[in-house]
Image 1 (cartoon, rainbow, N blue to C red):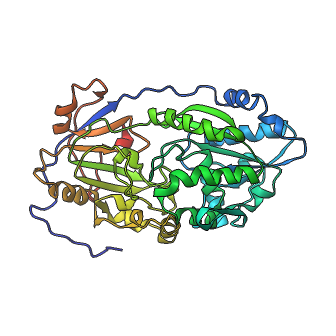
Image 2: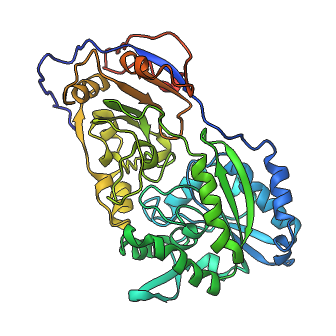
Image 3: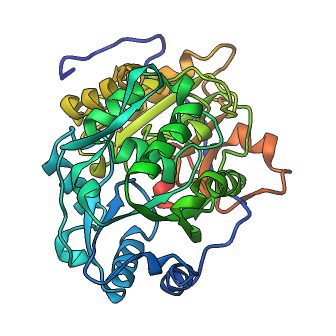
Length: 433
């Protein structure tokens, strides 16, 4: 695709780019040191594991991407269920991800380190659902058939800010119940109502599921600004309604951010479904596909994306937020998975393809040269690895001169010129810091 691409621009692409300065950003929030001990303590709280009786089949719902220590957390929760006498099995709880295909979802879990071999329990992946009733306006309420037929359901998910809407419940335990465990049909039904109604749909449909399915408890995970586990808490199903909003506020206070709030060009080394459901987190970049208010990002003119992560399996959801990208990225796109994801979400904007250039050098040059009132040598640039990795970033020398007195940033190495290889790939990258 785009093999014959050859675009001429004034002055060409061999520009006098500014040098890049390696910078470390400071964020508050400590990582949790003892993962397994914390899980034991949380599940040992009164009434949590006591709900599981010997011989019962327990569905463990897993499915969100990019969670730190996910393999360890899931495995240790399973070990606790086994010690209680239960027979756990894993259910992918990811709506339509993986191309809305059972084997595709199994493969995604495997990429996260979750498989029958690593967890020593069955993985029952299927798209069959049970209809539990209807919500207002005739919205059907679905739940995965394997989970519904179990003697109990356990939800494991990270609580964090959502990438398309703002509410008391965003990404977390309730959303996994309503959308993740709804499989393709449930996710489609809810998304068809629009993100502008999610603030009501998630908690209200969640209450229907909690009343009609055998949900026992959830294991809520909160991460700090460096994407490290900061808290693990077991929450009884009856407490989801009041406790999850509190955990969400804590998670938002620990969110990472781009500390410089005004510049010209944001460069993202990679996007991916393993990084964010939106490919890159709108809470970080300030752009999103839903058009709803509440996203507080930095101010800049152009957004450039260089690459797509391998673990995305070609799903480039979120590329539509960019202004410019590379031919290499577009050639990695699995349009079947990308389109299935966006159609299910009833939001086509994340699948839009931006201006495509044949190399990173060309993409960066086009981004800068299309900024208003900006010359290439004086361009204020922020270059991040991805929206999960914001501790160490690169900024252009002109921007560093503006922010170097900020106590929350410090220079961690000498400035370096932008050097591109023969293929136009930038050699200095945030992933190398």
